[in-house]
Image (cartoon, rainbow, N blue to C red):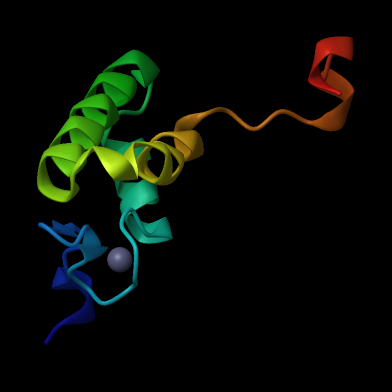
Length: 89
Ligand SMILES: [Zn+2]
């Protein structure tokens, strides 16, 4: 198998990476999604929001917090410490 052709997509209903990376989105999937939505953070947010809904449909409502952390938190921009405000402490 050609490594460059490996797709890093979610295997449903487990929501593990089809390439064997573990929980999806793996770092490769995150990179691919960022590239797909470059300059469109709102579009990326809508996309992962739909993924959370799909994951809850597959796994049930008890996974909401875990899937939110797994599917949504990585899209937030990383800020350097100097950019943090008093409310970020
Ligand atoms: Zn992967």
